[in-house]
Length: 181
Image (cartoon, rainbow, N blue to C red; front, top):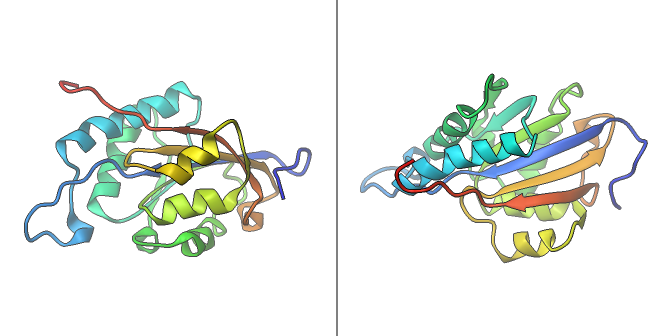
């Protein structure tokens, strides 16, 4: 099934994999912070979303330190960040678990940002994508690296109707910051 026109408002799911994390000795996985490259890439992801006019109405973010830092640095690039909900269920979640959380999103949210982890995010993007533009699906299948952004769109009456093959993968990018930023 592919995205259909005329069935409810256009909705967008913006999927952001957390930026590059560090591996400090003795730190639990959930507590790992961003690495220097991640500290550069997360703001670049925020700028890329603003430039693409892809700012969310709501953000859902994993409670892991690296995901929270990614959200904070990305959203600082916008005039007024949207509300964010930190949800422990997003940490280490597979595609099915992520979809269950997405289906709880209020219907008034038209653009949602999901900040989380692989392999669940990659699986979710591929599962939801009925179609992709150009080589976007191949990009995700090949690799969904840290700081990767995928944008999925569909017409629907609410997030509860989101399911496998219901969305169109419209864009994939991997914003990178420059040293010294």
